[in-house]
Length: 194
Image 1 (cartoon, rainbow, N blue to C red):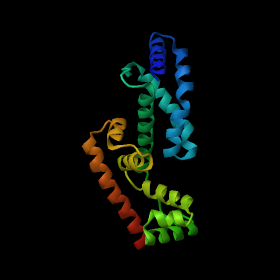
Image 2 (image 1 turned 90 degrees about the horizontal axis):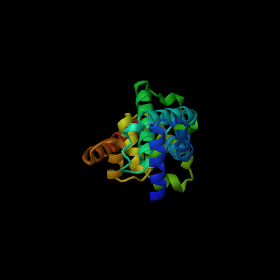
Image 3 (image 1 turned 90 degrees about the vertical axis):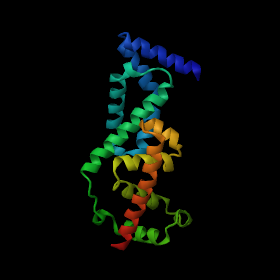
Image 4 (image 1 turned 120 degrees about the vertical axis):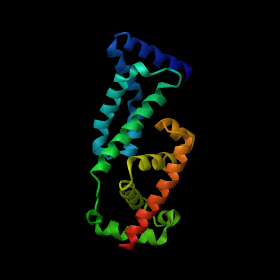
């Protein structure tokens, strides 16, 4: 691992020294990692465009890379922030009406809220519907709330790791995740009451 990190640092040094074509080595090495991050958090049709934005931002900010942590962590952080920016823009355009959900999805949503149990959803074998429901509900949250819930509860990152990725304090992550969970629960409850 140390060898790869040193190799990355050497490539970065060469790029900063004017050998800009060497940036393609980093792009090829980390493209799959960036795509994996984006595909988990963005609509499929947006992944390629946002990936380009990530690599452009990384290139433009390359001079800020200190080399203290692996390049993989640095570029992953840029990818997460790009997801955050994407959802922040979407949040400004928000208002996703329940009328756009199919009858089957609405029916599933009503049943899921009645049961209020992830175990019950799994027992029914409706993971796809549960994911769609969760995605729909997450889109109702602010980008900050959405990203913190995804990182902690869907990706399994610790509060400390999430704080490092987002550049927030550990306390901010804990408070925001607690509040975001409550907001998500309220969205689901209100949907059932309609």
